[in-house]
Image (cartoon, rainbow, N blue to C red; front, side, top):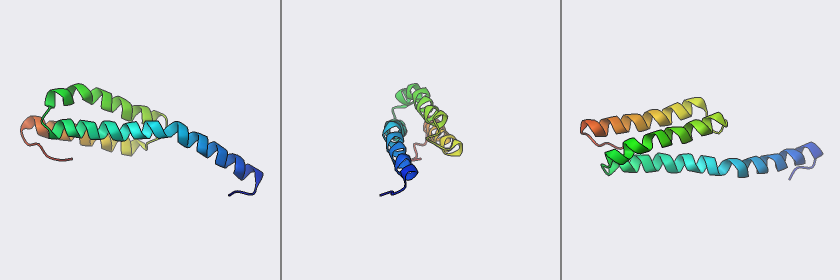
Length: 94
């Protein structure tokens, strides 16, 4: 536990930020897994319709500085590549 007053305040701020950011980080993980599940199950129509939603959630977290820009780009790329491979015939895990 912090002893110094400024460290105590920093801890309070960190807790508030963690509580505020946790749902958004969780949503990114959920959306990512959901999109991959659509692709793996061969539900390509649903996957295509869900892609903008997935990209939107990732971009929102990027805007809030919850994800690094390279991490967000990597996630979007993995989803797009997986969907592209599935549409071309070979369903492969990302």
